[in-house]
Length: 149
Image (tube, rainbow, N blue to C red):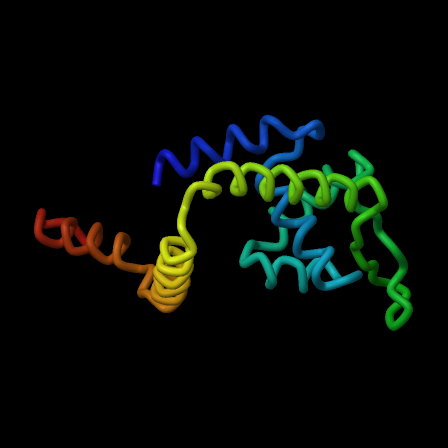
């Protein structure tokens, strides 16, 4: 997993636009969903509203997303990628495609299908797993050590 994180960092560093991974998540979510409210964006990326608000402000400042009036509720605004933001997304997509093309270019069709199948299974199991296991283990250790849960 550490090598994957390092590879992802190298890939992002190679991009002409210096956009962090969290910004990529926001940009991708907005590109897929269309203009949406900040609260919906926070739900989509499973983050708290204050964090998304800070990220959105930075992306607006960088010219990657824009705030638009909400036609349904004039008090609210919608977030959407700008042309510059869409260019950044396109560039990162091209870099990823090129990188994985080089990396997997020598794999046989059978290997690619097996990998895709296992990755799909892993993703499914990960998304459906109990993600509280670490905090539960820490709580059990505290209780065993005589502390409170």
